[in-house]
Image 1 (tube, rainbow, N blue to C red):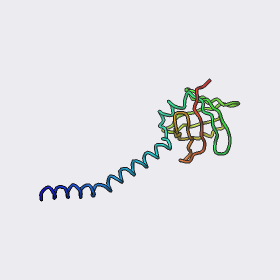
Image 2 (cartoon, rainbow, N blue to C red):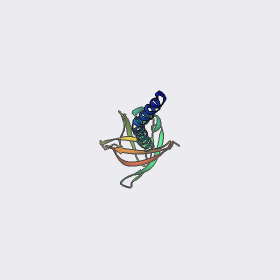
Image 3 (cartoon, rainbow, N blue to C red):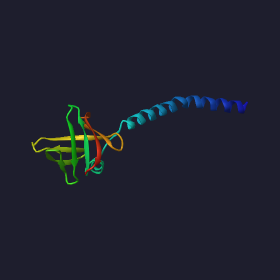
Image 4 (spheres, helix red, strand yellow):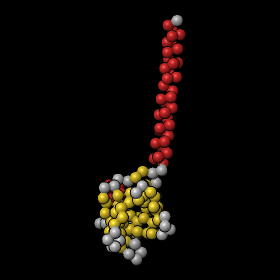
Length: 131
């Protein structure tokens, strides 16, 4: 009788923990899908991954760009220059008009980023070496 009681208790305990385990699996899946969408870069990660590189891409308005982001903060485009700074976890760009726009950057994979403004994707780009 004691063996049967123990078996029933183990069975009931398994049934009681099944919903908890299912929730853990579901949470793990949602966290995994969030991480596959990319992660926002910290200020130091922006410095490491973007500064000292060229980014070529397009903004949601259709404009194309190819800019070198020098380590000293200089931005070099085809026919223009600007200045970039890191403020917190954002990269701020100023092209000389006095208007500075600060973007969060989401890394999609080793070479592809998204530019975020107020949490919304406003552009994308591919990181490469400065040549």
